[in-house]
Image (cartoon, rainbow, N blue to C red; front, side, top):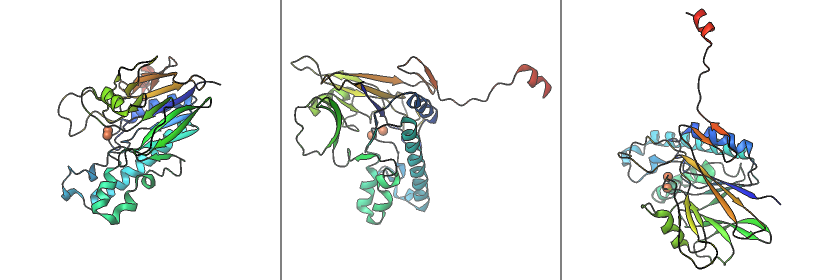
Length: 288
Ligand SMILES: [Fe+2]
Ligand SMILES: [Fe+2]
């Protein structure tokens, strides 16, 4: 049996996403056999629902904006699902998705309208929704009976000492967040989003391997109105390979996207920039 591949789709903050980066990534997905497509949350920005945004903006205009960006977010997720053609699809709720729940607590009439599963049409793409932010759930890929199986754990559940790799949206945002995350998790390696950077840090443990915390960059534009100073943000995504026959054996690729381009693990350059085709010098002369 060949290795099992999981692709991690990090924060896109739609409608503030970087479409050239997404388009390049989808090119790679079309060329690659994908078993698990894991969206790690903050797929949407939902700025209209932020507690930092004044009540004045929560108007019919904001509602229209929200519906339009939800439509776009659902369409883009469907595009990714189509490009990857993966056997399994998972969506971890980020803090920007759970803004919807916070808003509907004080505006109960909006609860159904704001439900992320409904707005992103996750049933249509047969995508498992994991309430990672609002309920603290963890998704985990585990080695079990010579196979890789996925399981979502509620915060109160006990994780048995199976070999596995966990996924959350993100608990910390400090300089050493990935190390803090893996130390706090306590059940092996773990991947997360939320910070929009790429880190890979380990913690000490007795035994043949050391658990690590990993982040996979983001698919959102750098030009966010609330960002005033340089950041560690890095566009990119993650690829994880698991050997089902060897518990604990995995490899990670943190794939950096620069100006809508990246070098795939297969050695091919993927370019998501749209460019007008250059005219030949002869035809440009004749049009003058
Ligand atoms: Fe986040
Ligand atoms: Fe984010």
